Image (cartoon, rainbow, N blue to C red; front, side, top):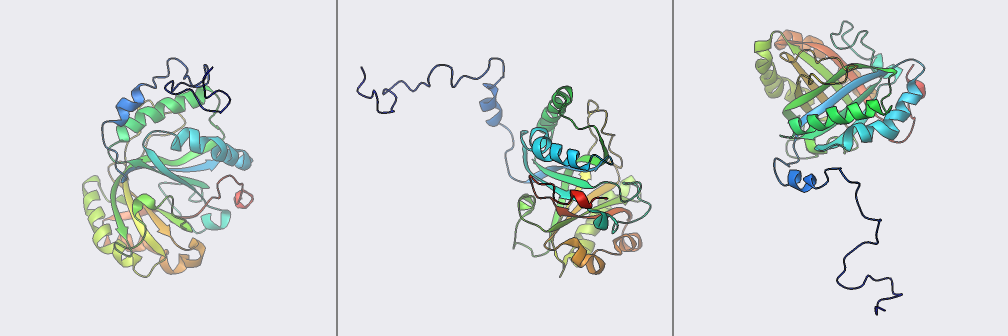
Length: 302
């Protein structure tokens, strides 16, 4: 008998788990993980994002929220390779009443879309992530783990174009934004007047408009993205992305509840862009963060 018998130690040199406790199921492809991790980009920059605005069907608000909180946020998003951060946001009825313009190319009517989810994808890993997300969502749908009583209002993977900071090098960076406890978020969607002018619109936003708007405001940063087309083998309930040649999506990260600063800092953005920039605002929409694992705010959606 070994001298280690009865001590709780494994006999020296075996390095083996008890039979049946540490084996992976056959056919999982687990041996490929080391190979995949050993090559390709693996920085921390949010080179890409998934931004998805969803409306649960009336009467399904609680069930939708529980499904997303308890299952889909993880199984359908953050458990996937290269999606390294995520956060959910909610717009209660009073917050949706602040949205504009009334005639929106994004949401019809403009108050449609109670929940916004935002995720960062590692720069240079978009194609790898998309292969996984299409496959896993087909599997989730086949296994009955996709909640059908909802409408995708504005869902798109997006490429990062720029981040403009209020305080320069001080404060959290964009890769921290979905983990930092920001008190609110404003989603702004702008279309260039024509496809060839999106670069001009971006330059105007980053060099003139956003620095002026951020100065002295409760917004610590604005991230700017451009949408990319969804793959042809996407799930049928998600419509193809519009405005891929003209559109820019802005996320304003706020250190205050948007209701406390809306009139002073976020009214008139559509007029300013129309008068001074080569574009038109299609949506300005405020949100507050959800509280993970809870149904907070669900009773204030309608």
